[in-house]
Amino acid sequence: MAIPAHEDAMRPRENGRTRTAAPMMAGNWWTASPRYRAYVAYAFAGVLFWLQALILVRGLWALGTGEVAWNAYLEDLQNPIYVAFHVLSLAVLVWYGARTYFKLFVKTQPPKIGPLPRPPLGVFPPALAAAWIVVSLALIVVLGGIWP
Amino acid sequence: MANVKTFVVTRFDPDQDEVPKTQSYEVPVEPDWKVLDALNHIKDEIDPSLSHRWSCRMAVCGSCGMNVNGEPKLTCKTRLSDYGDTVTVEPLSNFPVVRDLVVEMDGFMEKFQDVKPWIVRAKELAVEEGTTRQSPEELSHFKQFSMCINCMLCYAACPVVGKEPGFLGPAAIALAHRYNLDTRDQGQEGRFEALRDGEIYNCSYANECSEVCPKNVDPSGAIQQSKLLSTIDWVTGLVLPRGGAKEGE
Image (cartoon, rainbow over all chains, first blue to last red; front, side):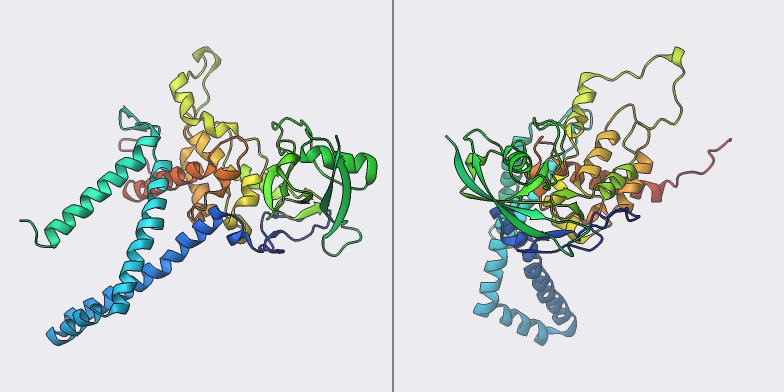
């Protein structure tokens, strides 16, 4: 089932002599293929990150308000709903955010990096994934108080 | 041995129809037929009023792009054996329809012109100065993006093109990138401005343009690289304003 695209999509600046039918697009394009579904899921992840930002803003506000508000905020974060939300956000960030970013990063690489030729494109995703894991572990070790 | 398939084809007569409709045809197809062969059979043997574009039959001219079962395809390259008993053929999505399966191309050509798809020189070389040389390595940087055949499949696959009329779209941006990477060209500044005016940042990386491209051009890659270079150009323009007279002039 087709739905109307924007009425001016791909329309010339001046109408031609022949009347044309309006541009259409597939009504179910976002579910039409696994690729589109992944794209829509990635875009939807923005809603989760927006909610995350609201939680952080609330934390900032609590920090500025005083110790009581800050402690209440920390206590709220222990709530299973908050914990489940953060686990879901992490999973979405890892699966869609990082995965899409790593693929996108490969596409932005110029033919030469400075004076050096670009490494083979296949090298980038595993290298990025390895760097990401190392940085994440380092943060856990340092922020978790394990070291130093 | 011929096998009968049902083709559900979009029909639109601008003199009679308010909106497009569909018409079904029963076509005896041969095992090695492409979708275009079936459309030509309908035109030649069943219904001469059917209108569709085609030319080379070998995936070079880019004329025969249509939606086959909802996916943008070059019909001369799309085997019927990959489909079931019913095949839906529609005009490319996101384009106004002139007639039946023929879409309006003028908007597409205007977007191409906006990015100046030719080599721009600040000053043409005199004949006695010889040609502008280019090494095979320099050619390899942009050759991929010059393989576009203007089939418009990427425009039909892009959800942003359907919703944002000001967006230049994949093929035009890939062509702009092709000339921006060409060592003989000196027109990057104007093209970056055209890319920004053409709402390049509206691309949300669906990547479908590269998925459907029959020549493996990777317009999505060109768009992401152009976003980066265009941003650098804009920031550089802020820090080092252009167009002023140099000291001593």
